[in-house]
Image (cartoon, rainbow, N blue to C red; front, side, top):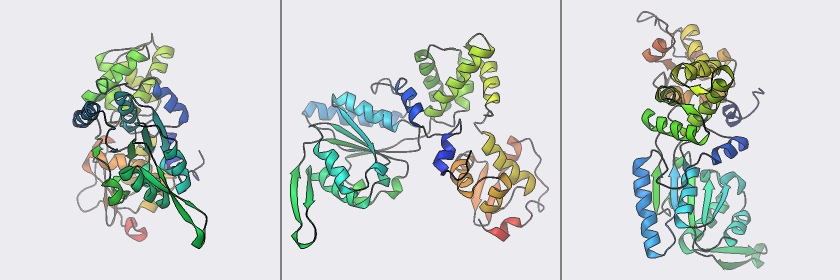
Length: 356
């Protein structure tokens, strides 16, 4: 791999990455639930959204604008499609990075049909001029198109049909308050529990015509980092292994053997995750060590370690970020089967030389 790539590119090449490329999105489409009844997990979000949509249908009105936040792979795009299906409306899909000018947004908004669902992924990455245009469109269903330049410029008001904006973001804190306040319904998507992921695996296996028992589904779910997208990806790789190395039936032993081939361990860590932990433990005695130093020890870019590997390690309680640098937790030592140094001997001070 070329490590000059962005962290997102680096993440996309990992089996346990939460992001999905275009080819995988096409595969995911066949596995997506079509209505709220089929959607697994996110119980509170489903219950609240069901009330919002039912009330809108009863009034014969367009549903309120919806903001969905949470980590990649938890079902934000799927829910946007379900909203459109439940409202019997078409859906228009784009992303924040694709809207760099207010004119780009005006062109999309002016072509929407009445009641249409407009799904705007990564809404926090939209340009500021387009964002300001969106305020008026969401609130008044109107945009002002500027014609001309300088003193002779003229604002032409353009009326829009009522529509439902569904915004999705992985970083809700980057949205300005005026934009957040214009959403009638906001929901945060949580990571899934293992039991919920087992249901996801069973459902996807049925759609893929794959035979899997309860223990096999539990093994796949347990290594999926609480993310349905990763669970479906691991299931497809385990399916391949079972078809080639076994009789096509997935049990616990087959699932464990398959994921061992792909270097995904029992806790969901992959090669990069374990390399970061191993360097932190073996080379630096568990820390504290600076991020730049740790990245050099692993042979990766600083951004790759910080944005690709660290979030899951921190969430799993295997690594902590401190003012002095990165520090391993007792759980990290236990996971790699290593014995922590005696009290007072951990770390070697190298982290202090380079900073966090």
